[in-house]
Image (cartoon, rainbow, N blue to C red; front, side, top):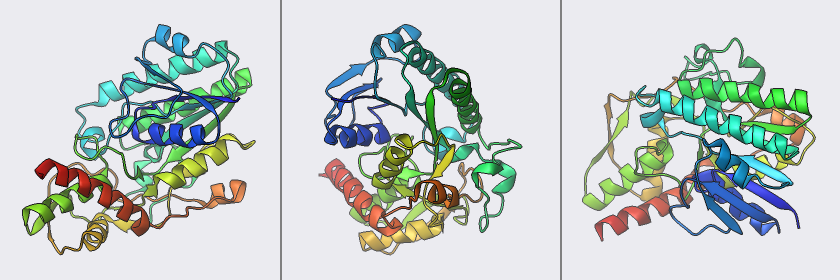
Length: 324
């Protein structure tokens, strides 16, 4: 039986990853500071602990694994990443995790490891126009990410690539673009914009309010990838002969106001949008999927509306439970 290690298995993407590869017949160990919040893990072994501690890393990476998925990071949505209040923690915590994990894997002669980077590594100067952002993989340099989160991700990409070159590790690197779906953060301050808007619309609906609030002018653009598509693309990359880095995202770009109206349509309500001050990040960002299609033949299966419907219904049920 093949063995897989999922680091960050208590988080949104990690929890879905455990469920998928467990369904493929792997023996799976999950590791995180916490258990998954919304449903039971399917991991054969789930270890609670802090990957910033090198001793703990050596404890959980105690054998050979056929596949290691490094999804653990200190992260969140715009309200966590772009305020500046959490920069030191974000950089220190995530860098320590990656340094420890790579060293422990190297000493166990583990060859195949996936690292989840982020679209936040792309230069801010290429994402000032909301209508035509540039995020091709070769545009990452000269580097100028819009946040310390992005700078740490870019450093860690280089760290993994150095282990690939120097030690022959089969590293795989993906730059995730706004992954969303059920069982993700939706009300703890770390939620991303699809979950935040789903929550706001659901709460306005149940309270009978006629408006929601949106940070900024609503004209900033993004694309969003449904979790099932993210897992599909990650597994395809992991089991290929290609290192990356590569974008894993959607090219279906919308403004934040358009996203809000999509959610309203799914909810069956018509609400006013009130724009307020708040952290926003770059003006425009979408995934450029030309390289992943060329190398792996991958493209998303879920439209934004399909994924949002599944996400909204899940979040609406949580909101309804709060007010039951």
